[in-house]
Length: 205
Ligand code: GLN
Image (cartoon, rainbow, N blue to C red; front, side, top):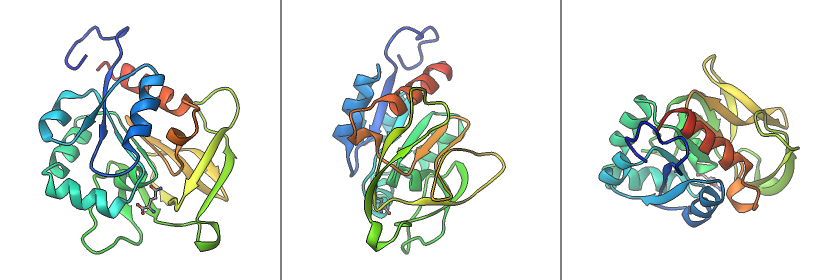
């Protein structure tokens, strides 16, 4: 529970940023991975969770709505104080310190020392699936669903690549922040969400 110092055995309260994107899929994947999930749209709701998922969707829309809902600065503040956050696809873009090709006015929350390229895999390959071996996820490769996915163009010293595809990092961790270019929430395989729930528990939240 939020603020509960002995929350080890209880289901951590993890929010899903519910401005746009595949919110419902993340809520069910988190539930299956042992968390107590809830949608987050308001700063008060953000303040109450022990971890947060930023879903896949459209990063420009999520960015604009985060500004309109007064959530961008609170999100940056919670990331700065160590809140565990997991972003998939558009959520990965939101966690990048820099976008190579931002739309005008597009903001990120930032926190991961990396530069991402939006829609990086190109027109002919807008959506595809591939087996991806992810460091820290036991039991064989995950089924990576890539939908107009970004890739990581470059990564700073503070961040670790957990998985690569076609020579680019597609899963990255920096401290309490986790990002994947693909969408485990669409596969029924909850191991990546399990890794994130473990990160939230380890953060003692
Ligand atoms: N291309 C989208 C973006 O730039 C991300 C796509 C996704 O989340 N599936 O935000």
